[in-house]
Image (cartoon, rainbow, N blue to C red; front, side):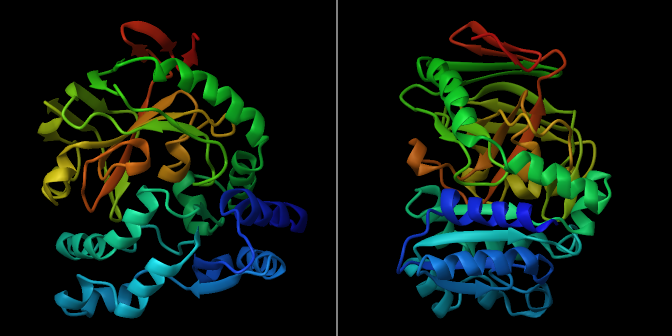
Length: 356
């Protein structure tokens, strides 16, 4: 990664996203492969007079996770729980050597990790502290995307180093129209789903949280989803496993039927994680013009302009959501070829193009 772009990326993370101030305790989660970016972030934290609480991974190393007794996996160490409660901001840099590293970890262990992370998730979902999750280009991420490392690096930075003020203004215009509505309807291949956003307002993500950013999202009314959605365009990765052709049918806000072309049994295990796992925690609308193709990388794919994504599980309390779960699983639906989005019966987006 060229120096000037690396410095700009780090400034975006520390300045705009985490908004770090003097005296803050900033948790910095990053894998060793991200060291060039980590060094830039550490320099900026130091210049702002902030503490850097460096963690290689969080909450657990995989070798430890595979062998540790269940009672240890199920709860954070007391010192880490104290950290979660005291930190002022979070910067998490993903740089995996293998994106399928967790695929052989039993689902019940991954569920235990999610339960252990709940205090952290609660602070994040309430937007109590500034946070950003991002990536550093590694061969594993590039391979999943079907790109060389250099091409993925260019793609990543092209999706991150945008005029976020201008894109934010554009997204707020779209969000204002949906904020006026009580019901959203999603129509597409194998899909006709309605859900209520009555009394809920959009949160516009304009380069201040996940990076790449570029979406606005709602916490749907918890008992409102009715109908069917088929995620047939893109597979979804969860827990190191790739699930293809997911189809969900909702009644009174709850998944009552579910199937998939692959990993169907694992899909049902995820839905049975807890009661909240069968309800929607998020409706997101992708708007990032720099993301033009599917990468099998949810951090990017959910922001793709012309797509929507639904998250099963925990909702953002900052958006008015009340659904509770230890999972928050974003699944992307492509609307760019035959998809339609309605607000109170008015067509507002067709084939991924806005009509408002």
